[in-house]
Amino acid sequence: MHAQITQMCHDSMNMLSRLAEEQADAISHAAMVMVDALIHEHKIICCGNGASGANAQSFVSKMLNRFEHERPALPAFVLAPDSVTLSALAQDNRLTESFSRPFLAFAQPGDVLVVLSATATAANIVSVVHAAHERGCPVIAITGTSGGEIARLLNTNDVLIQIPEHRTYRVHEAQLFTLHCCCALIDTSLFGDPDLA
Image (tube, rainbow, N blue to C red; front, side, top):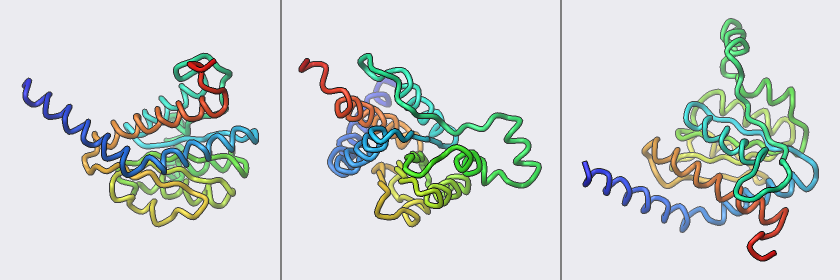
């Protein structure tokens, strides 16, 4: 068991090292897209299925509360339809709209959509990306290595961060790390580096 744990740690470190080498520019770009939106009084809207959804909720909690240092709450929320809404959508065969319908209800042009998807093929994720483009909102997509269907949908105003990993649980690990990087970059850009104060 010790050897397995050690191997998993090495695999995780290797994956994060590749992420830094291959996706640092994309992560920085994503953070600056969010900073620009926040400066112009827009909001950040996040979504994902399963563990990706949990990572989206974690990110939003850090935006609304704080990341590492105290600062004002930042406008962000996660699309997470409740069980009653989901059952209503299912009854009308609209589960593929589980994110896009609430997005279109709340989003304004200039808001940022952050989608997290390990496979980047889920129909409800594809649908919300279309909704963001319809509403004039840039999309930040954090996907697995292939980029899936989402990569083909993105335009020049969007940002694709492709985790260099095919194993779903590793993609979820890297999603959270990527979002932590964005939190740090957003806080420093908006409020300065507290260590230099």
